[in-house]
Image (cartoon, rainbow, N blue to C red; front, side, top):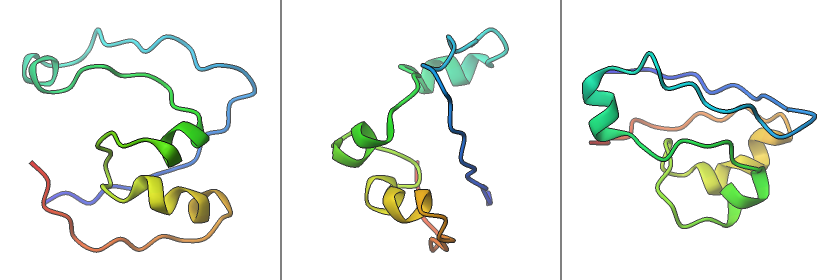
Length: 75
């Protein structure tokens, strides 16, 4: 069981390159294609996100509303 906390980070410029040097072997096999996403791209994307409802919830989150998402089985 995991309990994640999602925080907001606003960058005044494009995000830096993502350093994957400390990722574990299984992470390299299972998770790829990391990048910084502008909010409008997340909201309009059909990609899979975690939490799964992120594109729908993002607007409220960015307005400062607290999001209490129910348990999500994800594998």
